[in-house]
Length: 505
Ligand SMILES: Cc1cc2nc3c(=O)[nH]c(=O)nc-3n(C[C@H](O)[C@H](O)[C@H](O)COP(=O)(O)OP(=O)(O)OC[C@H]3O[C@@H](n4cnc5c(N)ncnc54)[C@H](O)[C@@H]3O)c2cc1C
Image 1 (cartoon, rainbow, N blue to C red):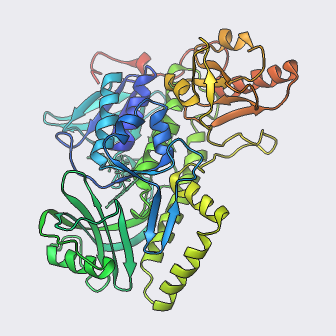
Image 2: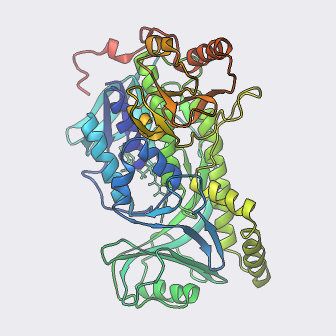
Image 3: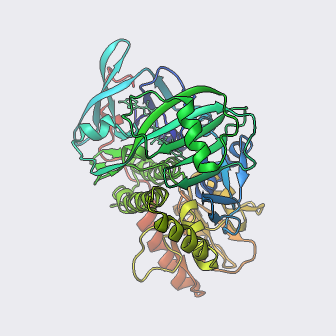
């Protein structure tokens, strides 16, 4: 196999689906015996929806949940998402199992092989591939892959096998999770508030059950301590003014939340993605979104390596681009959590008053919306690069090669680079020499810069130059830089070339 993905959570599913869609032979090893209905995440943010849109999956997922235009952080503090410069100017509230189901179905139809009941217990790598020790019902077997991605969650065995530290700290403990029925449903989709003695959050699953996340400062217990519905009811009443008539619980548990990040996301042929690479509190619903976006960033680069055209440094750019994003997310969610946990009345009053005032200022409100939604994420660019390089590509209207009108994110569904070329004559040599990696479209309004868009919908290169010779010379250099040589190179160190008769997986 070309790539072994360890873990079938949202990060692993997205990654495996993307790789398979690009013609890579992928196996997913998942420790669980079968798919789970466990739901942690509810919030799917705009940038994740955009990336799903670029795979033709957004509408299906949106159909499983409800949308809210305002993200409420505390009673008086809210972030208005309705002005986001996105087709998805809202937050989608849907249980994590719907996101996983959509991603899994897409991965299966792209040809991913799933092996459930398969636990990675160790790994070794050499110059040409990775030997993964996988425990199944038949004992421990060695599976050989060209590359391996650890999307195996916060307690990642892959991370431990690489001997990577996971520095950070415990952010909050004794947080209670409860799935309950209520007699007086809350009027809002997401209801959350923090008071002196704790906080509570409640949202519907959509099937009559409600998820409560609650924390009681006065009652700090180890994760193993049982949770009673009364305990959840009491802190909910305190934080939200009512317990909504909670009367039945199908699931009660207690967990602690850490803030940690691996220093490296890549060690040679092995990568980390999702919670295996970074973990933080659920505040503002960032974890799953960040993991899915890690996967979108890594998949096309790894596919390029498997197919033999990855330019030098492309795989390392996963670390350069995604590690700072992870660090930022830790900071944002950590900051929100600490604000929620403020104890002194004066500090809480200041938080609510100053926060509310700041979020009334449009530039600050818009920046907050760009941050929590992921729409504002941008990757490092060279000092002399076009101003758009590294930023997320906006979803403009375009005419495709066959002159059919559409949107850029529809053009990206092929999983290739897209050259948005406003000039009257599209450079035909692009289609000829990089045609296996680059599609060419024209912006419907024929204005704006010429842009090379990466498969993960970020701007790789841009130019406002109207001189065709200069522009095309620069474009040719950009294509070589991002897409490798015009002719595909022979794969280097591709483990499939070393496959032996025993390597069934
Ligand atoms: C209460 C709560 C609420 C949250 N709400 C949100 C939210 O609203 N929005 C959001 O974006 N995020 C939220 N999160 C975070 C989100 O749930 C996680 O970030 C997300 O599930 C991580 O996805 P992942 O694919 O990286 O890892 P996981 O979902 O943890 O998946 C890892 C998979 O790897 C498997 N595995 C582990 N070890 C092995 C092994 N050795 N071999 C094989 N398989 C293995 C596991 O069985 C698992 O299926 C929340 C978290 C909590 C706790």
